[in-house]
Length: 114
Length: 117
Image (cartoon, rainbow over all chains, first blue to last red; front, side, top):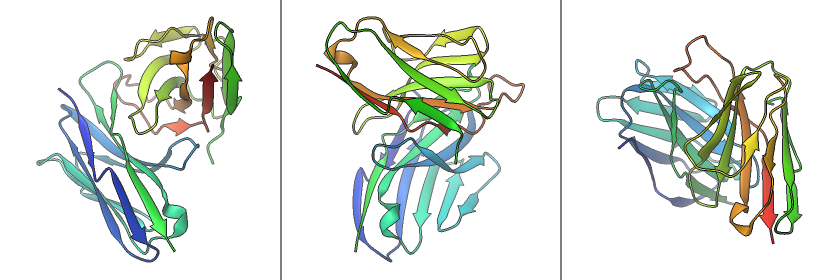
């Protein structure tokens, strides 16, 4: 069964600290993996998209890694800011269907305290 | 900023009412999607479209219907709303790469939060 599991479910850190969010998936055949940031009451916004051949990708203070062999990804946030408080969603796309189906994780709720 | 817009942002209605959630995008994207999201849960695909006059049901069974008469417009309609329809509805669009199995970058609207009393 194709699944995307994220951990932790929620996380509280102090402003300026770093943190790492985890994503494990069983989706096959794999096409790409995406990380989205969703502020409360808003739509998700894309942070990174990684294909099979990409091990790491950065977008400002956000760095995503992908290990396609172990089917794991992480999102590292450096020098956190209050505006980083949001839900971070891991999404994996397959190539086995005619839709290019997307499998969504439930997200990690990050809270940054001053 | 993504050029995809949803209205209304918030809607509270009584049971049995007909409602239409509007979604428009100005990026010229062929693919459009409707997702349903409940608190703490993953997004579920309820409808999608590959282009004008193309609509398909998604993974999650929904009593809603959609239409795609124009490329930029993808409204969702509930003929008779019930409390079980209370949820956040997210519209999204992506470019069509020529390969239907490859979903390009998704751009989401801000969402429509529906509450049915």
